[in-house]
Length: 81
Image 1 (cartoon, rainbow, N blue to C red):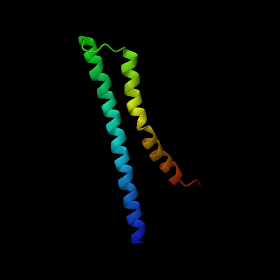
Image 2: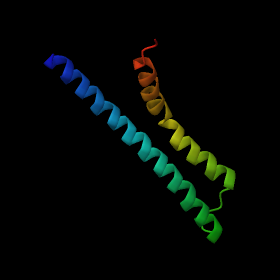
Image 3: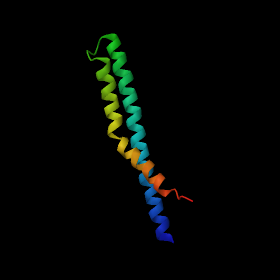
Image 4: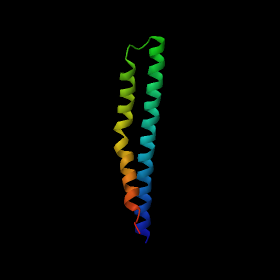
C-alpha cells in the first residue's frame, strides 16, 4: 500500500513539473510576442509581425506535447461505465 502511494506521489510531482514547464513556456512566448511587437513599434526590430507571432507559437508549441501527454493520462484514468 505504501509503495502505491509513493508511486502516485512521484507521478503527481512529475505532472506538476510538466505543467509548470508548459505554463512557463506559454508565459514566455506571450511575453516574447508582446516585447518584440513593442520593439517593432519603436523601430528597434525589423521583423515582420507574422515572424514574431510564428516564433512565439513555435516556443509554446515545443512544450505542447508535454501538456498533451498530461491530458492523455487524465483521459486514460477515466473509467467508463
